[in-house]
Figure 1 (cartoon, rainbow, N blue to C red):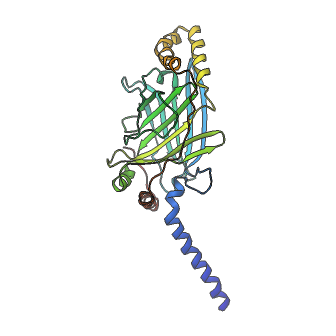
Figure 2 (cartoon, one colour; figure 1 turned 120 degrees about the vertical axis):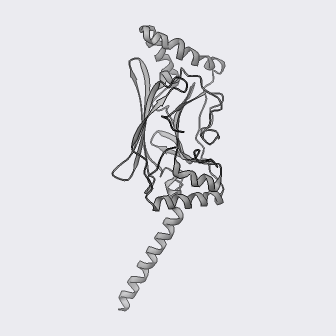
Figure 3 (tube, one colour; figure 1 turned 90 degrees about the horizontal axis):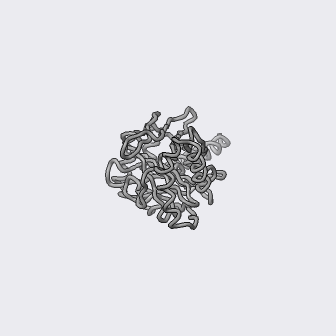
Length: 294
């Protein structure tokens, strides 16, 4: 019996410590605040691609994320022109059988960059997008379906960035508790670099998940614009794109010929707000929450 008693005490201690650590650190792990310089627990994998279809250039981004017991809805929504509602691509998401979640963005870059971008495009909570070094590069923001979600695109000399922000109803409790914060650890996975995390505000429909990535591993901005010009010279239909898209976007490059260097610097918040956010995320994890979009 003495031997058995010694065996049981460590086991009880082990389960107590494990539960305590899980309660304290789960949300932080979900938001990839692990130890070390490379922190990418939330974003498990990213696959980037660029391709041409009927003379127009597209990008495809597939990111795999781990939310613990929280799952995204399984749906596909159109990415739309902000004025004409023309469909420029799709955003698809679903929860996988292994417990991970996938979000796939497919968008027509040629048509998207025909749209006048903004220098002060913001996340749904009104704060700047978490990408540094953009300078005066215009950012094109495209609505996703009839939700608060948006796709963001930026292209300039030395700059090729894509991202999205998805407002999640269940994150409203975080915003109501901590107000406006941006929590965006940077990540590096292979040759892909970017950032992903949570944005919040005091408004129920301005809290959610955002993701941004450098496309330069699959898209060279200068080469892409050069290829568009060549295609336009060979096709009457793409010639119309030249006046609408390439020429209108090429003007800023002439004014600022030096290539820009973008960077993803981790953004955090106070330990007090972080603790509140972690507690709410842990409760959502315990409930095995199925997330919904605003």
